[in-house]
Amino acid sequence: MAWWKAWIEQEGVTVKGTPHFNPDPDAETLYKAMKGIGEARGLLLHPRPLPLPVPMELGWGCEGYSTLCPSAGTNEQAITDVLTRRSNMQRQQIAKSFKAQFGKDLTETLKSELSGKFERLIVALMYPPYRYEAKELHDAMKGLGTKEGVIIEILASRTKQQLQEIMKAYEEDYGSSLEEDIQADTSGYLERILVCLLQGSRDDVSGFVDPGLALQDAQDLYAAGEKINGTDEMKFITILCTRSAPHLMRVFEEYEKIANKSIEDSIKSETHGSLEEAMLTVVKCTRNVHCYFAERLHYAMKGAGTLDGTLIRNIVSRSEIDLNLIKNQFKKMYGKTLSSMITEDTSGDYKNALLSLVGNDP
Image (cartoon, rainbow, N blue to C red):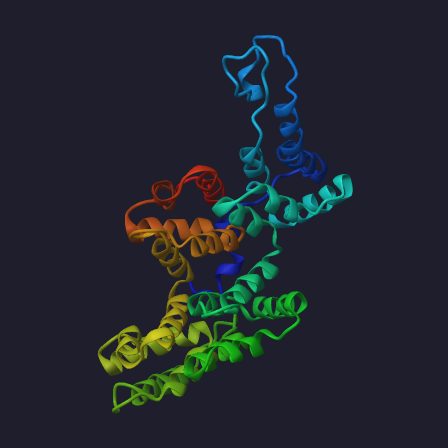
């Protein structure tokens, strides 16, 4: 399914929140799951005698002593149970209730209590969607080096309205223009295609296609690449970034008739590096956005090591949009479920939280 249709597919949602929602008990559960660090340390220093036997579910960890003490730490499972089973809107209400009841910022408290990949995932869940994507874009450009893949992924797969909301959130949170930061951090044709994508000019849900213009675009692409020595990159950028998805699908069909090869094969032979990745991403999202995200998730986990940033970003950002549909494509493409690959590739509380977000296998 093309990227522009994916946003209305309700059957794709894995995290729907809870009915009859009340944020106050959830906020209290989270507080109890995290508040024990200081108290537990005090009990470790000055343990209180307790009668035996002690029920196992209380979590006492000093077997062999008549004076028992609770194990210090955070109840990660309680945090997972609450935050991965609430919608983002519900999480924002929980954060407000947490602040009102306990006078603390929930996200900052989570950061102080958690660590590692689990912390990164849970904190990602607490961001409103557009602020989270703005943060990912900002993080991709700050410091030494630029993570072009992150920028390409987000800009090529979002609608015009979403891009506008991301740009607004970016400016509010970081005090600068997303477009200007991209221009400052990239160069050449990559800069041009990213700025073009940011305009959101591909949106057209009418589905109208002009066959004559589609044929002309296909001929222009062929003339800009396969037909000449060298490549007219701007012609590729202009057509890929300003035409609607239904129109581009027709262009790709006409192109294959003319060139006797797919548009993907031509892009691979005519371009390279990040520009090639950007153009191919536009084509993939045009053809089937669920296949594209399935590929991104597989890429994050295949081989040695895990690209946790890619894994977290795509599961969090798609969980309330189309993750169920991505899971279906994942199984078709790779012969295994997304859950099974997560189980093989991750561990501990991090794994449990990811699996809770992903939901049941197709």
